[in-house]
Image (tube, rainbow, N blue to C red; front, side, top):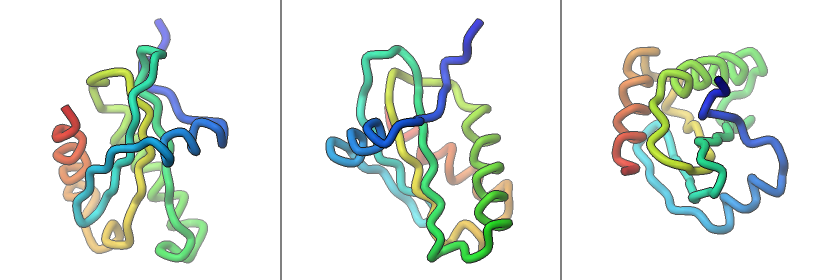
Length: 108
């Protein structure tokens, strides 16, 4: 059985989300989303180089975000871009996970 969660691959998909999005945010994350017709949750990660200077840190943040996303229950067919803010580094892994799941739960 294929997963109902996939990553956004093409720049066209990213542009579509950025141009037609609804936004939800908290101090650590910003989620931009738009509905799709694929019956899947698709996500993209935006980890900014100005906020996270070292590549090791950016990769760690992306790895942790993928584990957060893998534990989600897809609510509906949406494309979303998750922007990780600089405050991510100041919190623990558990605190960041809790903040992300709370923000994701507000999307309904």
